[in-house]
Image (cartoon, rainbow, N blue to C red; front, side, top):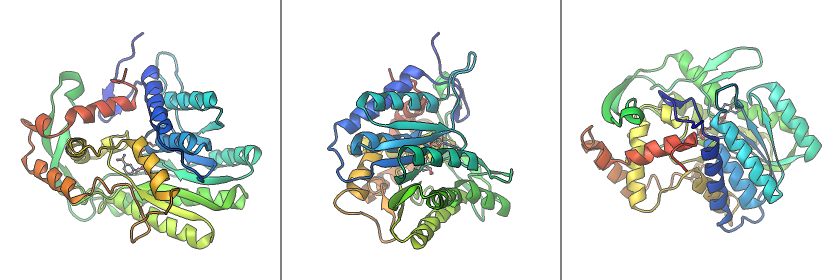
Length: 381
Ligand code: NAD
């Protein structure tokens, strides 16, 4: 039976196994064509490895550095007439590719926030590796249940005052081809909402993972750990950098510093990545229109990158290359091309002009929609 995309809001509830497999193969092929990264870590734990930046990190580690990987995913297999999640198919495809290449790859499917999953993963590391030498933390989740049974939800809201800006309305785009530019107003968050967003998307769980790995003697003292952030520019600052999610990302950076202070030999990086279409970013108001304008400009300039290009370049050029390339605050800047003044200047000019009548011409709406469908394995083969 042919599987079709079923899109509800920002989520597609179906996924194509063939398309997801193709997507993973394409990423593997991309990395295989790049120069091998010498001297990088060899036993890499990737938390949140089934989609987006985490999946690409795992592929770049395995096929770019020849690293063994353990992935942590939270995905569902096929059930009755329901397809599996895209992450499930991606993971199957990754494991098959790794097996064919003779590269160790095992995956634990469970809630990465829970102590049970952490213990399972650490047992596996100790049994198969002794210790890991790199931990990539790439979770993006709307909620987190802590071990005392309390569930926290993250919100994408401003802090202080409400914020109105243009946004892309794709609610009828996939069914009827109608794309509109509308105005959205985002309400300021309450103190509790800010606190809870930091609890879900901040660095607390990253810290818990590292502390437990150290306590259980399952991580090399000189290990490298990397978590991901986004900063963006003025247009999205009220919503992102200066909003609830930005507070969580500030916390992530604070955790990276405190981990390095606590564990002398450990390197804890936050990499600020480029804005790209993923399951998580599609849920943020304003951002999809920004991404469509950005894609248009960066593709025209020949400097567009997807998650795999970003993650390969991060390992090869910024962290495990000849030098560790950080900014003055110690952050890895994978948003260097996105934030180039010429790129941002052109995005700002598009932003001024864009409306429902000219959005398909001024922005890369096709590219945005195609990337969204690709996440679930559609529009690919
Ligand atoms: P994504 O939605 O594509 O991937 C998130 C991954 O986390 C998925 O594999 C998902 O299954 C997994 N996950 C979620 N909850 C889990 C749980 N409880 N247990 C185990 N796995 C779980 O998201 P993404 O965009 O790749 O985001 C990853 C990180 O990169 C986030 O920190 C995000 O803020 C950051 N980032 C994203 C962008 C962007 O534009 N997409 C830009 C810069 C930084």
